[in-house]
Image 1 (spheres, rainbow, N blue to C red):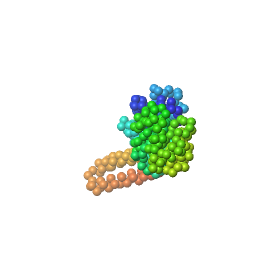
Image 2: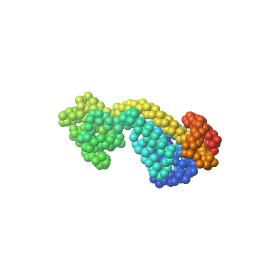
Image 3: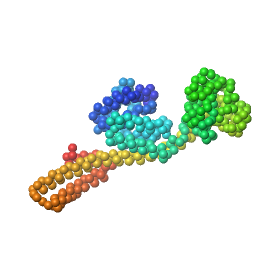
Image 4: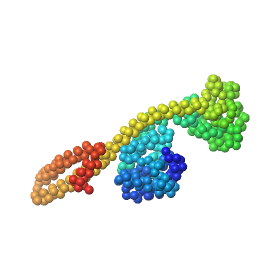
Length: 409
């Protein structure tokens, strides 16, 4: 992957995307294209007349961006063509090519890129079919595998574990100790799952107030930790302290006031700030950073297994698309060949009928029928042969020969 300083210079804002779109639209070698720009990738999917010329045109388009010098571009580029390009798009859309395999955001970004290109007239028959098949592949991967079911970040795992302890998180009180990034992310996830009562404790009250404001919660003095503990259902500690700030005795007293209602502790501080021995108490659950990391790793392994199933789906969908694409190359030639033959047939029938003079309808139909039968029998072998070769590597040669013989160009 290109470093972030490169990706941010290539990222396409509205103005850059407009300029690049206009530039590519003027290139005769490119007949349709879609621009995809996210925080992790900038990609152009294009239908081109000639692969080498098309690659050069696309590279030149990227190099034209004012924020990036052409000489620095090559080592960060990757390029795919034919089936490899199809497979890549299907993997991207299915989140098999994401930093976090199974994340859902990328499919929406691909759909937005496609819709934008379509509205600007950048999408033709091939890319229209390609992207629709990409969405089909992504849907199949998401519904036929469990690729998105297991959390693969510390904060997300913490929230998933809380949901297992408390079936319903709405109405639960959440206490965050410290203002660490992972604790804040976990807090936002808890809020997304219905938690509304949030208390923030920080040794610097001003920082606590600022974070509480962002989370729509309230900040309290750090010395009130034991008092607040008696009211908290979920406690996340992410504070840099050299000693324990919650010990077993404090939790025992809090449980007495809570009438033994369960408390879930998440200690993502290093060194740990919550006494691990509280795990001996009834109705108390505690996970530290290592516990959470082991769950993350287990979930990653499970996602990797599901990703293998997703890859099989992608391969099948790519084969389906390529079979259609191969037919698209052969079908116009068959249509053109039969169209030219029909044009000749009609002209010759008209000449014959003119020479025959006044003939009956029965005779006219007999001539029409006979001439059509001759054409069908003459073209049958060519048509069958082309269809048979539609998915072979030599189809381009067979198409060229037929078009030369029948002078279809």
